[in-house]
Image 1 (cartoon, rainbow, N blue to C red):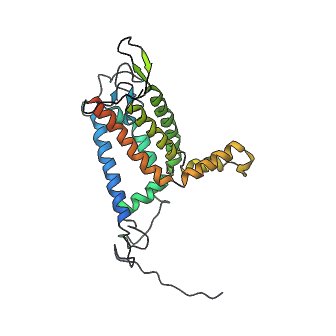
Image 2 (image 1 turned 60 degrees about the vertical axis):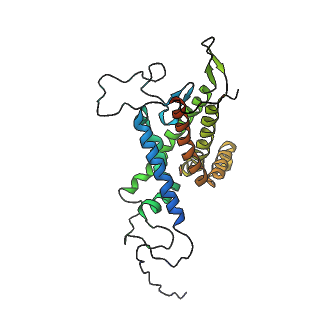
Image 3 (image 1 turned 90 degrees about the vertical axis):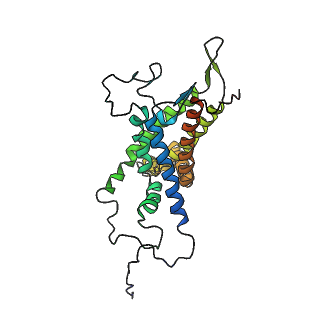
Length: 267
Ligand code: FES
C-alpha cells in the first residue's frame, strides 16, 4: 500500500485555525476549579462553624478530632503544635481531594485549563515535548484506584451523616426526634450527587469488569458494570454538580452555625 509523508509542524502557543470559541471551556474550568479551591482552602483553615444541630459539614466529616461528644478520638491533644491550625478538615480532605485530582475527567480538564497542555484540540501548546503520564511526576496519577477505595468509605460516612441529620433534639424532652430540615435535604442531595460521581468512576468499571473474562457470567457484576457505565457517560456532569454541592453543603451548615441564615424545618 502506498503512503505519503505528512510533516508534523509544531504550532506557536495559542495558534490555531479554529474559528469557534474553543477557549470558553478551559476558561470556565479554570474559574470553576479556582473558585472551589479558594473556598475549600478557606473553609478548611477555619476549624469552626462546621456543625449545626444534627448537621455536619461534609468538609469536616468524619470528625476525627474536635468536639468532645462527637469526634472519633475526642478533643485536640494539648501537644498539638500551635503553628498548625486545629482543623478537622485538614486531617481528612487529602483523601477526597486526591480522588478528584487524579480523576480521569478532571485531569483532562485541568491539564487544558491550568497548564494549557494543550489549551484545546489543535491549538498550539507551550511545550515541544510530551512526556505523558508514563514518567514522573504524572505517573503518580495511577494511584487513582486507591483513592477510589477511600472515596467509597467516605461515601458511607456521608450517608450516615444524612441519617443523623434526620434526628433533631426535642427542646422539651432533650430526646432525639425525627424531622427533616432544609439542611437534611442539602446534605442528602449532596450524597446522591457524590454517589453518582463516584460510581461513574472509570476505575470502578475496570475493577468490576476487569477481573472476569466474561462479565455476563455474574449478574450482579454485570448490573454494577452497566450502572457504572451509565453514570460514567455523565461523569463530567456529576463531577461538577457534586463539586458545587459539597461546597454549598459546607456553606449552608456554616451560615446556619454563624446565625446568618436560619434552617427551615420542613417536617
Ligand atoms: Fe473520575 Fe474515577 S475517573 S472519579
